[in-house]
Length: 413
Ligand code: FAD
Image 1: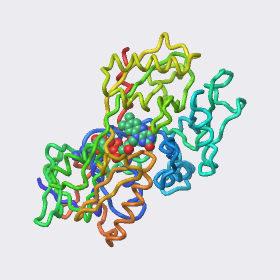
Image 2: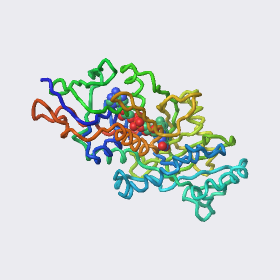
Image 3: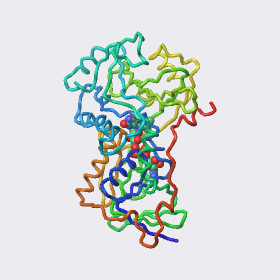
Image 4: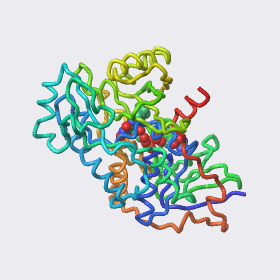
């Protein structure tokens, strides 16, 4: 049986961008439906390190650009949400570390210190006295200086579950192989048709919002849209199961005083440990340059660099793993890296990339502002079906929340 449903907004993609937006739109009285092709958060979001940052690492070249100032407000925005006082209620989201640290080893200390002590950064960073060191560094004779940033780290699976759970009836697991997009002559997207367990479903909406991360590229191609264009930045991320190690949350600034910390370390609960162990997850420059290395080479390089950075940690029984993943973002002139959430309107489509987990609230604000600018108002009754009393959620499954990669990387290891 073919069925037609009308809604105000269809969101394509169930990562952080789509789920945050779904929450914002429904609060504003819009009827909205989110389509996910695989697992919720299973693209970049759950693979991210979960650092909600104020952009300081982008200021490491010594220049505080307007963009790095814009991102500065984000940690405070998220903190209000975690307290239930923000635009999205994140009470119950697990925070892995309330602080994030930056450690500059000896060589560049004085230059870094001058910059970090500058007026522009006042209030966003504190140089720590030894007695305020976090447990991981306490009592260690470290060279250089340790700073506490305004950043913190969230547990992304708990974030995704929290945002999805209240909207189970509006989040649909779809088969993209069967998805067809009907375009009018003027490029307007008239509807989407999908195969459901009850036959073909046609979805009509006032606006369609693409929040599909790397999936936006093929969707734009299918729609014949050449601008905006997507770019991907590959990373070779490292994970280490380090027995008895304490959790570490730190950027290690290397010898080059540049944009990317040498190592960016976060720690995540080890799902296979009964005694509360941690998986260390490592990005930063090592993950960028690591795209040129094989898995074996990358893991050996990880052992070498981490052993050098943290000589007091016993890595002898550590298990190492690594995987490749792309960051997806809009292509900017001169191959620049975007610093803000990106939203572009084409006909009745909005094309979006948050570019960073941190900037997701900014993305939703921009989409809401664009809808307001275009005069789009809530109209539809909840995913109304013109032909019968069937509901959308009776036609599709609810997608699962993705598991962190190390759940299978280390299981059985
Ligand atoms: P995604 O999370 O990729 O979600 C897109 C979703 O769309 C996926 O679930 C996918 O299955 C679905 N999809 C794709 N195509 C279709 C389709 N045709 N139909 C339906 N669904 C579709 N940012 C930070 O601020 N802090 C960090 O610490 C951080 N660490 C990172 C570490 C790594 C390794 C990576 C890769 C990124 C990191 N980022 C970080 C960036 C951040 O993770 C991303 O900017 C953000 O998660 C993107 O969210 P998204 O919802 O746009 O995309």
